[in-house]
Amino acid sequence: MKKTMVIMGAAVMWAMMGIGGAVAYEKQKVVYHINYDDPKTQAGALRNIQNHINAVGKENLELRVVMHGKGLSLLLDPDMKGEATLAANGTPQMQATVAGLKDQGITFKVCANTLKGKKIADPENQLYDFNKVDIVPSGVAELAALQAQGFTYIKP
Amino acid sequence: MSADDTDLSDESLNAIVDGEYPMHEQAELMAVVQADASHSNRVCALRSLKVMVQNAYAEVPAPAGRGRRRRRAGLMGVAASLALGLAAVLGVGLSSDGGRQAERFVVLDADGRGQRPAVAADEEMRIVFHLLDGDMDAAGELLDEVETLLADYRQRNAALRIEVVAHSDGLALLRRRLSSHQERVASLARTFPNLTFVACSNTVRRLRVEKGLEVTLVPEARQTASGVTHVVKRQQQGWAYIKV
Image 1 (cartoon, rainbow over the protein chains, first blue to last red):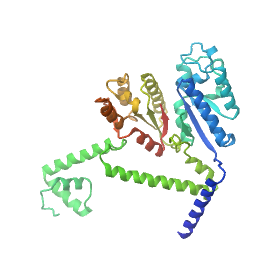
Image 2 (cartoon, helix red, strand yellow):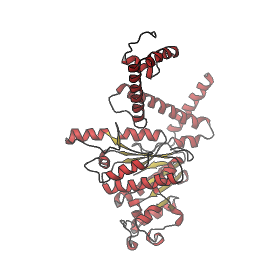
Image 3 (cartoon, rainbow over the protein chains, first blue to last red):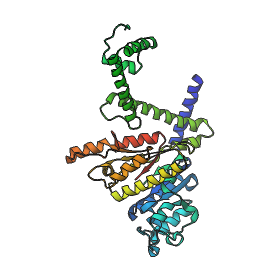
């Protein structure tokens, strides 16, 4: 019992010293949820993500963005809107921000139900920098599954 | 109390139903109860009441007014968080696996949007949807998503529980006068017993006090004292959280 207390005390002191020293985050797994189509809020979310990378370091961060419903408008190219029943917020500026985040290892997951529901028939051409491996069957199920795997949920 | 004392008070009968007597007294009292038809009927009524109360509060916490119990639960929650925090600290200090353990308890921002992880993938998946948006299109999309999920899990014979907690503007989905999805809510609740609609009582009360509105909820809506407290509790219990 006494020994345990000593170890506990040492551990607490060790942890406090850690807090007092240079800030270094442990590895983090995080999922950002975007299902709204206000371009300002979307741009704000991407800014949050960049700040998150800056704070934690890209080598310490496994960060995924899950988009479904109206959120997919983030990647929809205004020139390629076609039949899509969705806002097209994928302006050159937005595309540049997304490209910058992807360069830092951020993945953008796209909901298959939404592609169908919002009539995005040709995602390769309609969505910015789209890759088939980014498709998830259901955005909501993906959010739940990632949380079950220990990802922290953030909705900016 | 002896077996020939046949005039049992409600309090005694309640105590019998709750099994509060020592075993031998319980047996004696049960004999008295069984010998008397009116006692038997009262015990029977009390038992079914108890079961109904248990069922009603099995998933949704009791409304305000049971202050003492709630406070005690709150203290236990605080104690549990402290224990968890200490465990996380110890995990960092003592185990080589410390980094991963600490990460499991990371809370990312002051608004509490960060959270602990949900259940393991091989267990029942539990998801709480926090509906704050009063827009009926958004609520309709939520119902679409919920239905797709429920149908998918049912088809795969996998365990799933979903709660839709309607709070603030989001309460509109469960309000008789505002919801354009009442039939849908009713049919979903009928089709999927693992789906629960929960209304925030604080929001109901606030509408009454601030706007003088007497809110009528759809019959499928259960009530919880505070929508926020409820979703926080669910996350602490390992539910996945999705804000709508």
